[in-house]
Image 1 (cartoon, rainbow, N blue to C red):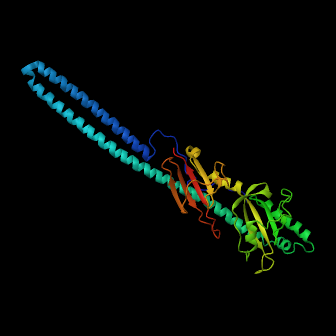
Image 2: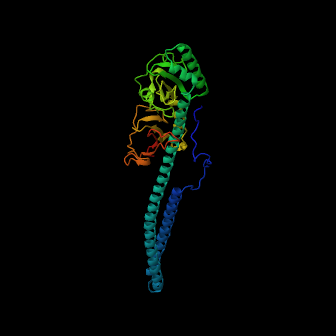
Image 3: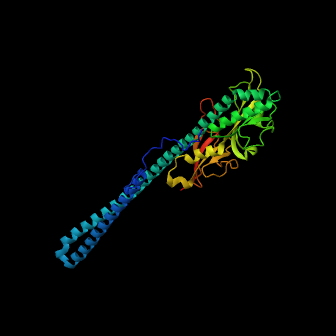
Length: 364
């Protein structure tokens, strides 16, 4: 099964915005209104200043004219008074507009931030949902392949007659499975004592066959399973026997008889790094925001399992405390960094492991 090449989202398919010199957002429109208001108030003040200057000149000329200029002096005084009223009105207009536009800008900014935050939460959910669906398929695969006749025959009689031939045949069968699926590094067929009896890629990983995995948590849990419907979901880790690759190991019991104890364990090693990389790098982030945005997948302890910048996998912990919330948005008032997150909702019978999808965006 090929890895997903991109992350489907309700935001995909939208037409890309075209360059336009006109305001295209509410924020830009608000700022444009503010600029227009400032310009018009400034123009009113210019006209008022000119009127006051004319009134002053008229008063001077009226004084020179003496008795003959008295009537003209009255008109000039009226013009001067009107100019003062207009100036006061312009001041009130400027103060009122400035205050209201500032309030409007704050509300618009808050609405924009809320909308952007909700979008990032949705994208976080989208990423973790893809992981859930992907890992649900892994649980189906391991349970189904554990019922293969060659797998059962090898696990049931690891030391009996024809054991070597059964192991070789089981290895071939596992190799056929691997040739049809690109998401696995290897498949291990383990006996009841924890010895790896066969693996699907003995040429690539020759040191696997014959080694004991009895001390591995996934083996100890899987050998105790009671039915073929059960499985052990694996935490992401590095597997030394697979070249130190990041894997998510899923395991299921192998049963010769229904209702009886497991006679062995089948473990499938999911190629975590490659598949998770396709998901975190495929989240739809605007081009202008990519440099300050990091998409991550984290486990229930906030350990980073994958990151779009390729850093910190299995070694870094997400700095933000999610408080076990299902989803949300956390803002750092000092740095302006915003972290949107959503916990795994599970898929079908796969409940998930408490993992989160998260998007961390630094302040502009």
